[in-house]
Length: 228
Image (cartoon, rainbow, N blue to C red):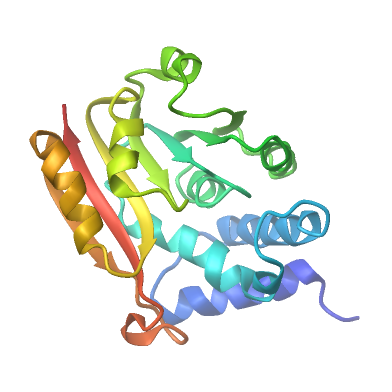
């Protein structure tokens, strides 16, 4: 009997994890592989990831979204995923860090309906999806000062992430953004405007074996510690 799609995804994910000395609990990997299957199936009717990317869903979406958790601080309680799209990185983050509670926000209704379905099928009790603009007065009123982690892999400049984050975060919090390319100018603009809030900032090169040695794909993780 040929392996199921979920089994194929699980094997691929395990290989990426083993190659990089990253060892999630087996049950978490199984949920991540199931999530990959759900996204790939739903993507046929709702554009969650680019069609040509479905073949690389484990590397480009599932593995990398889980892998960034090794760069996150330990003592966090509540996160907001801005522009979650198909649930990235919010759902892998909720799977990998079950002690965290998360809000996955996106302004596109179809995407959020899909993410709600994924959360339900994955039985994720620590994540909710909201069809909202995070800069809206309603969203700010509902969530102000409640997050200690803001994550995003949406194409949002760092300076805008700061603007979105500040009303929503606690006095001490982190902004974590998955980025590509040269960040110097983007970072300088953000630092110029929000310097008084930045306690520490680090940019990690997201190199991994076997297909992104020396980070030739230019994947970066920006981690900014905020102090209001």
